[in-house]
Amino acid sequence: MDRREFVSSVMANVMAEDGAKEGRPAQGTSADVSSPEVTAIREKVAKSSGLSLALAGRLSGTTEAEIKADADRLMEAIRSMPANLHTHPKSLVPTGGAVDQPTHLDIDPIKLAANIMARRLGS
Image (tube, rainbow, N blue to C red):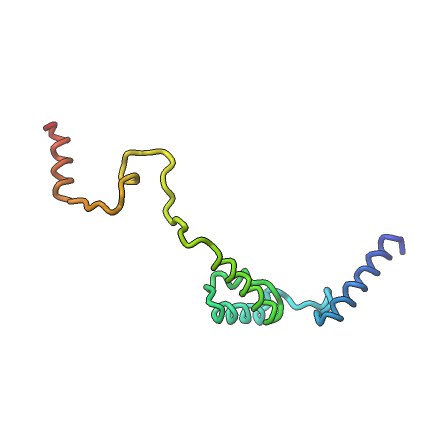
């Protein structure tokens, strides 16, 4: 056994011992993160936390407590986001079209059709 292999094996043993002291499974024996049980726990925690099921796959952890803690952190981050986010970006270059017109104006379709016909007929 060369020096690199020895150091790697000692580090793996130390990490396994630290994980056992903290109540975590050893690195080689950890549960499959994509297992159906973990997926079910993620969905259950997402529903109870108020997260959408689309965000359930982003939760990390292998136990229900870890997943719940991650869901709480995610919900806190979502709540701290500014409430005035724009969902429709404003055009950077004025186009002179309907994009730049205020949306609160009422558009009369009859007047609009009359203006279009007048422009086409050259009046």
